[in-house]
Length: 298
Image: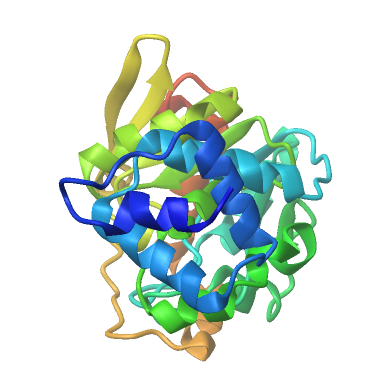
């Protein structure tokens, strides 16, 4: 199909813009991933699509096409953590501290990363995973290896210097065929959006409300679990467990992030334990966060 059909659907103004059909959307994304059209045309489409606003059906179709190109490796008993690819600026990552708590439950953590994507210049999963030794139940997947076609358009996305639909889709690519997933959204409409796009790919799907799109609990947070009746909300409050972590960074450096992981404070370690409890709940190892937290002490 002529790519300009897709450009016209997102770039001709409110009266003429329209949602792409599933067939059109999949054809469009295949052409982008295979770079069958010029860089300028791809950037123009991504910008117009962003301004027009992507629909959930279009994003789901985009994810479906990405799955056509992913080389997957089965990691049994695994939970995928859906981090954004543009990094973090205000705190370190907790997942390297969480793995050890999950070993006795035979639960694996799966994370994926790549070079930093727009629009934020933060510390990425790849920065962490390639600069520290992770526990053997934490599995890092580099997108340049399992989905090189999406990795290859990084420079195009950097030209745009804005978020695009790929920022949403890439959070949960599931390269390990994980049965469970945990991701994050800051606003409730995005919880519903992520549920519609991703939940059907997992046995259990949980979204937490957290800054910078990180699926990690640092302070009192709302969370939602996808059920047959819709989204069920619950609260996780570190203070309930005697945790009072309030350290923040204006813009954390990689060295500072690694130092926090290698030499965690008592409260940061307690936060890791609480997040391990959340992982156990997400992986159906416990009925709720409280019982999961208690299981960690047995």
